Image (tube, rainbow, N blue to C red; front, side, top):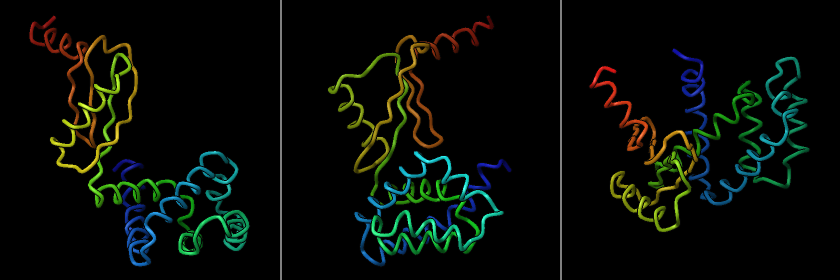
Length: 183
């Protein structure tokens, strides 16, 4: 089992608990804003990540720092959740837990995220057509596109939704022909 798989399996129950808590208190919108604030702070501060990952720093110190940083900025529910993570020695996994939380929340809201790799920038009209097609294919209410430009594709695009990949790139078609021709 890979390290990422193990981390994902550990993070999932905490993400489920957070989602259940948020739904119980009916603060989904506020919680999502709070989680974005928290995630932004983690992305911007490498020191905070190091602090959370360091087992030599006492839990009480970590709790005090969390309270000082986030008290008044995020809801008490999310703040309490962070403190529980410190008690359970899982605060170092906070980014993975938040990622799993958003995956679960998107699944409940029927939102699909598709990674689109293309050789050139798509126009708004092309994006809208692609979104409509993907909504039908995935039976989702909403599709969010993460577009990546990769000139190595030559033409066409690759779409990745979860573990599924649709590859219509010219690079892939050339590779398939070479395989069949055994070149």
